[in-house]
Image 1 (cartoon, rainbow, N blue to C red):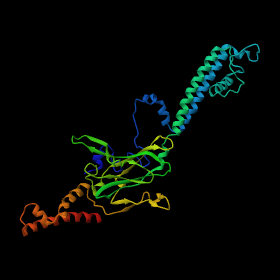
Image 2 (tube, one colour):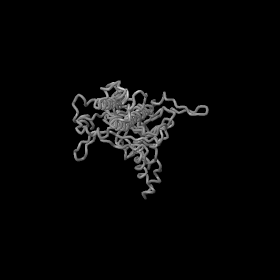
Image 3 (cartoon, one colour):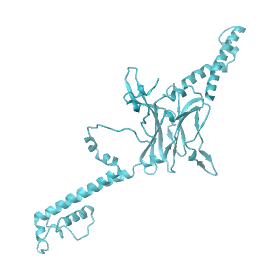
Image 4 (cartoon, rainbow, N blue to C red):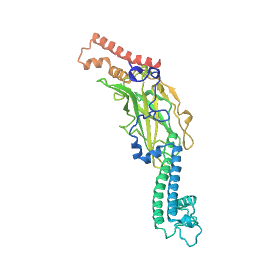
Length: 390
């Protein structure tokens, strides 16, 4: 028996009734990292740290770095002029200053901006009688190029991040379970709203469900892979039009023993991940979504959205999330497979041929016994069909 007390024993009573998503519908992971003591690790990868910051912090750091750099080198130019005595010989035509027309900190700050940004208005210029100024000019030029490369690179990477491309990759609101090719299958639909395609698109699915091992160890939010076509290559998508992704519920599936009744009481979540390269930029894009137990509809199928028009195919995204009810057994896939296996032999063989193959005499009593067994096994199939209609 699955209950919130056994699945999430560490949660307080007031939160056990609410199912907490691991991944939200918009793809954002609902996980917060707390008590991270080794914060210095963020500084070892400062480039990624800056790119991951929010835009307002990123712009603030961008302006701050340039302003501090200009102020620092402006102070250095003013300091050289002060030490050399250039500020005491302002207007003296017989004195050769380090920087012409530099008469205070403000002009030194402006000269620093002109030097680092290579503006060069021509009013303030360094002279050849100032070796320390030449060295400072070289240092500022090199460091200014490094700052430009680092900050502009951060801004470029942040602008070109394909996160917004994932906004046009859509997942169906619900997942469905129904019969496909004689087997129970769990299905969901994906689509791309843009005309530019996702290259090398692939799909993955994971079941997020807490479990307890045979030794009594409790594993919260255990992740289990769900096969969505890895063996056959169906997980690699040509996402030109919406596609229905199918997970066959077989003996290797985590849904093998889950029936319609049990699904309503399960505390689980299916996380689906769509990955591919953006055709325009070549950068990898990832879109995510999830389905909790209440969003998995048993006995439904997706409404077709693709129609043939005059010379082209048209996708109706108004029906992208629509589903319709279909006859589906309410038993688990394991029970369905067992009943089907028991019923397949009597349904394909006649009673007399079965008796003859077993080497039994073709007597009336044996025929009656085999007929009773056939009726009993056929009754199991009829019960499943009646349950699906209900």
